[in-house]
Image (cartoon, rainbow, N blue to C red; front, side, top):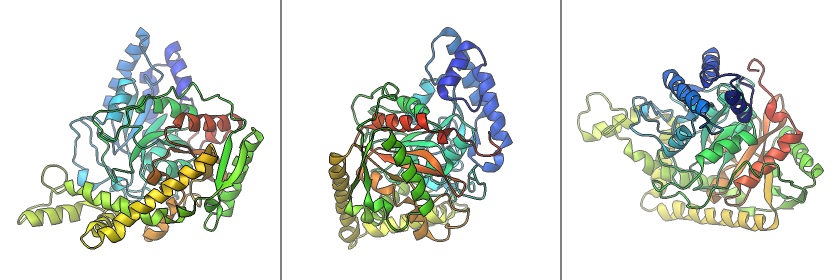
Length: 483
């Protein structure tokens, strides 16, 4: 059962081949069997079985959606009522959310069964899932390698068949990068397409939730439930949500693909480049037209991002002060001591580093020199994408410059770690939608192809990914030992 798609599972549930209770128990057993991957922070077994029981009643009545009774898992950045929501941090290790994030509410309403909360980089700050207070997640393809971050628990759980699909969030590549490293499909929607209400903020102008699944078809089904306007979120866009499944099979003959020359220069592994070139050739064979495009300001994306994101992080994380909720130091001497020790003891090194960077960038005398300049660069990057997407339908390239690196290999070198997001960060600065789809293997590790589209063209991206997956089987491959 664990290797079936959402549609296949839905057919099995409706035909009585198995119940949601049986299906859910199968995945709970697999989670217990593969605890060494460290994918989950919390496994909500009792709640999952209760939800599965309710789903079986709905299915018996004929009142079910495609997701009814389907086991999924939530990244531990989404608030879930009555369940610990830690954001991978000691700061929130004792926080039980009193409400549901909109994404959680929507998936609950669709009848999905939540298996638990997934491990992640602390407050979504990281590219390897090594900054989590709960320890590093292991990549199921090579357990001595990272799964990518910050949604590493989500990617590893889907790849290892511990969950049918999962939610993730993407601030600078945190859905696409782990999806690429773990050989699954991940979609970062247009900024504002999925509600951020109840999604604990890292960088508010960059964060966006999205689906992570084995295939584009499964991602489309999950995205259908997640997307939509939310009056509780001031950044949510009020526009109709298309039926993401309807256009999956549309022809792509005549599709114009842009290849940014800046994506294929120094720094890209030759082995990864070879896989990407082969994937693009598949699109050529299906009738797509490929042309080179140039986006000269992409080289400025990383320095701009690492001013803007930490600046927003320093503001967002100021609420975690030991007063109202979260970790509180023992026996504070006064209010200053309470703030200082609570934050100093509960935040990890990377979070502290980004808070300090952001506070510095926003401080008097440096705001204009750093923050305002970074925002101007952000606009230039957006204009580069606008010009390129006026010439082509989509942009393609690598997701990461290399395959998954070893656990511990880069954690001591922040600059090298930041460069692992070199091909993904610019998309968040522009607010565009983008996907990672499994495209092959290099050195025995998965490689993802990145597909970038214009605003609110998630349906087209899912179509383009689905057509590729109809003629390849990379998305169907399972890591050894998790078949």
